[in-house]
Length: 158
Image (tube, rainbow, N blue to C red; front, top):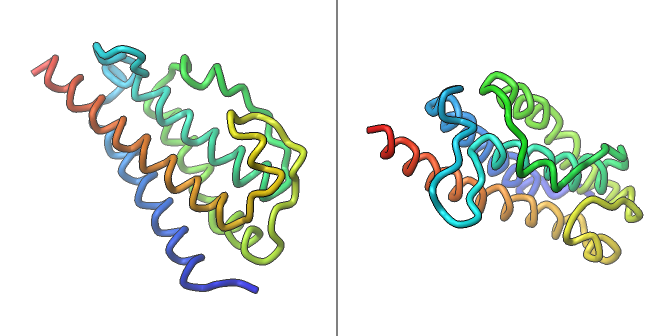
């Protein structure tokens, strides 16, 4: 049974996080989106956003949707490219979120055998609601990381 308030909340929060990420990478432009802030263990804005799109495809597309979307998690953190490529990746996952959330709340988890996360052990017992909240947590955490990275990179140029 679909929980309309939960479905709406998840969809809005994912959309807001993705829209904010998109705005930041557009603001940074191609000249800064691949720059790495001078912080220990930092990632470029491109890598952060690319990781988020791949994370969504893993948890929502593969685990919930059963799509078995290939994932190279380690490569996500060294990925580089253009703002246009990130916008396309964001558009792709944003267009699919509603369907994935619907599957989660009507059918549950379709594939508990998939791997591609540091939290793969959680898949065996995770409820669809846990997965949706986990996705929101990850997006929000990485949006904060992206905001900090942007602030450093913009200040370095300014």
